[in-house]
Length: 536
Image (tube, rainbow, N blue to C red; front, side, top):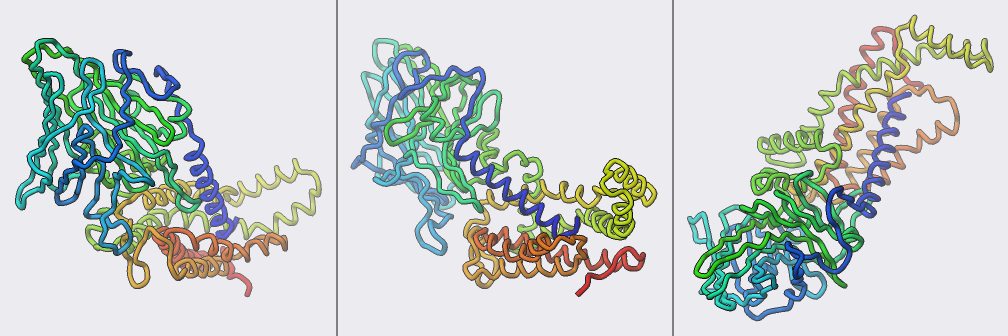
């Protein structure tokens, strides 16, 4: 097996993996053992009384207030439980080089995505009309914290909802202080849920993406639950830890209960929307007594370190798939390199060189094995003529020849199989890195997460594959296989036209390193008489 066939193997395996991943995003149904799950519109409450149905809360209200920090701009609907109906991420543009911030939460006719949070009083949903001291709140210059209090009263019970935001943070705490001033005890519980229009994300083969639910519980730090899953089967179970989220490419919104010994995770759907949320157990609140319920909301980009600090396992919404153990250190190293070089494209180049350099012993073993196999071709042809159709004797003779010459017939394949997980992990570490969104490289490459607008990188990548092919003596004698091998650089150039330019840059850099390594290895092999230059 020569180097071009190895490259073909990598590419075919990569395409197969991406096809499988995309199919999995579209068809996966999470089955969780041990959960009590129910079909229907909405789950039962914690004590199996009334349901946590707040789907009507998305109606437009005239009483909107604005809360602004250095990284977030939130709009709160005070007449509907103080729900967050809009969230702009001030450090992230909606489009490349636009002056409009990216809107993660929204409440409009085309797509609704809001964060809802409130209390149940006496087992019933209480849609609260809050009052505030101002129409807008802004984090003061030099201040590290902003508190936004809202107050509502229902049947002698006063609820004070306070949003607590920190400078530079996409995590905000929501504190519900409940004061029972009535003459009777009241059962109190808290709910926090995410409501979103049930529209799956539009991904592609070259950039498969996921939009849908996710959650964490006692037995798993991270599980996905798509909108289709919610329509088919509701989650409805109690856990002692965890969170619920709705995720999309580069961004996550999540509710994390605080100071709760146990709570219920649930999902349900209506005609247009999907819901995922948590509800705390009911607690009896005596007259003239207080209860504090609290939750944390993450609304922002997929920043692993900060999300991990906000809630255990939330950083895993940066989904590297089953190769997370490899992709995580790759992403970490990419971040470290960028902190030195200051350019994400340059960081990709250096990271590729480091990875390919670390794999040099495998590459050398691969080419050495290939060279030895080529040297044995005349003897193998003689054996074929000698033994004809006697495959058993032919196989025995070949094994004996390999032992005498100390050649491993799989030596050219094993390094490729070891490289494959690294390639896939690198792919996902690039695809899941929000830092590459709208990140420029140089000249015409102004967004490493988008395809090359002039297709220059894919063309250079194809040319480098052609050069690798020309440098690699081939043992392929079948005319059809030769034509396929010759056409392969063209085929993959066309395929890579639609890849994000950051990944094409990685592949191009890898090819250049391969050409350099090939030159060095072949020169050493020629000195040993194990390599002959390819015929022109």
